[in-house]
Length: 333
Ligand SMILES: NC(=O)c1ccc[n+]([C@@H]2O[C@H](COP(=O)([O-])OP(=O)(O)OC[C@H]3O[C@@H](n4cnc5c(N)ncnc54)[C@H](O)[C@@H]3O)[C@@H](O)[C@H]2O)c1
Image (tube, rainbow, N blue to C red; front, side, top):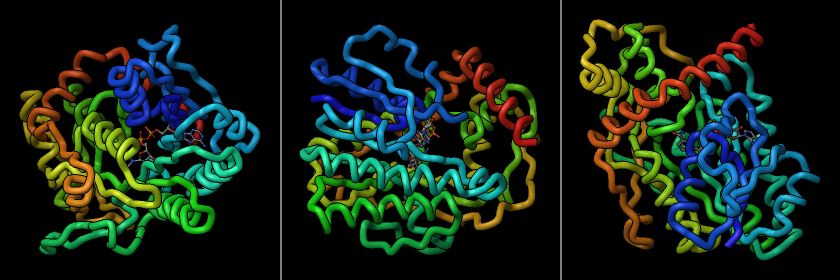
């Protein structure tokens, strides 16, 4: 099988490429990535020279690039997206629409014209909006979309395009909605690597609002195994929720990290809440478990400890990406 992984130089995409290469000795993987600030080929350095891996630098919203990239593949797994909620609020949402909506349309159209390609759209639980802290329910595949921030709205747009291509053209399309991921190779603007880095450097850990916003946490390699399951066993046109059964308030995440690194809780500070901040996400992954037989294998306590060790042992990777992020932020003013 030859698989095009779009956005494979990012956090989850690079973990997924490692997963495919390790799990399927006869698979070939092509990585199509625009290398935005979040794309980092250092995540895939160990695959340089591997005859089963190749890289195309390009934009999923660019028709000519995409038509060529899908010409000889059996499946496309699309991770490519603008992903940082704070950027979609404070920097602007145009790039989010270009990548997360127009990019998906460009891929779907090129795949339809080529024919006989399975498309797996990697999406987020954020499209479902927010639950109250005292609401015992969780998002199912039937929960209506109610995105509250531009990032989530743009992802929802891409997901709806997928649905429409299945309904209108019979395209072989699947969509997944996953909860928050953590693990190696995550850009340190996201809460887990950001807090690990701050704690290691004895800097304050800023929590939005009261720190009680709840997310469901999934180890990135468990997300990869879920995507593998959906790609190989999922039914065309279906949507699958992916979750970790590990709901935690953000303040708990901060405390875990401080405890494991043996740092004082006094490093926790509270800052003004961000606009549109969803209170709670919770995923009901019953469909994936009962219909396709997937469940997460890592307990949160083990996954977070492994993740912290990875960041401790990969300081060069962290420092390089921090230097890159500083340049971008200076450039943005
Ligand atoms: N991180 C999470 O917790 C999480 C949870 C659920 C779903 N998701 C979804 O998973 C996907 C991957 O998330 P991530 O955290 O790895 O993101 P990331 O920001 O680390 O990586 C995104 C990658 O996409 C590339 N990219 C961006 N725009 C592109 C374009 N127009 N053309 C080609 N490449 C482009 C970037 O260069 C980067 O390599 C996203 O679609 C996201 O919505 C993420």
